[in-house]
Image 1 (cartoon, rainbow, N blue to C red):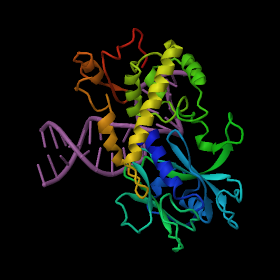
Image 2: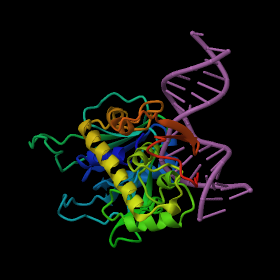
Image 3: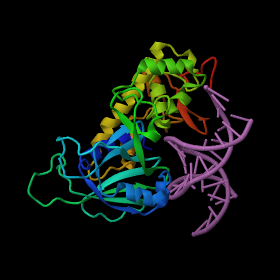
Image 4: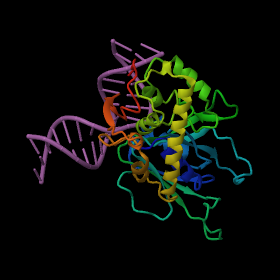
Length: 326
DNA sequence: AGTGACTCCTGCCCGC
DNA sequence: TGCGGGCAGGAGTCAC
């Protein structure tokens, strides 16, 4: 399931291909992937066709590509032709993939949207610079469960960093822990004001973004905190420990996700490769806690129903707090 | 303000 | 074998 690291892997993959490309064709195979598009598929097509894509951005699990009007090309690094006012927003949901196709692969089973791009002035890293004719590239949105989607949205200024913009529908999403402007102080203050449990808070994208069920459980285990710990009782040290755990687990996943990343094929399911290797609690119910085992204790990872989903934790490392908040 | 319920979906896995 | 039910989950919306 794509959380921040998976989305960042996709963003980096796209960054090697799409900046400078113009959207030539738009094929919507399944309108349900455009559920969030105002005005439906027609508006989507009209608002996208002929526009030039710039460097993809990300906040939490949201990905977007600012769009500029293509005029006479100034080329990358020579100043934008226009300032981007709109962006193509991508959310991968549960099962979304953004694939770059350069060789006319057969259609994937759950292919929902195809964007034909052309006139790519930049060569992808590592490719031979030659005078060969520029290949056209197709961007494919593949999504099995249809929780994800694409839509166009206007860019609005952020309220904390001058000159920075985000899509209007992403403005309520908090900065994620890998964001250079992420503030530990601010998060700590907001957690202290909340009256809820820590896992619920971690999953609240308006408080801190990018964290889903898997990394929430992993980070809580690393920080030795129980999921029902009341946020208002966290001290500075604990918040700091938790944030470091979140950052660490995300960076680890990013590193490993990066190794299996092929710029031609961004496979979200391929994420299972590193999940298996580095997960400590998620999906390990009934198995031994590795940290306890190192200390000579045999504790089994427990799984409980929580928030209509599952929570995995070690009952020894993460004892239930005296006052629990769910 | 916080929280639960519901919705959107498909595929897989279980038990009968 | 086949069918129904449960489960998985991100996030928006609505009700209390």
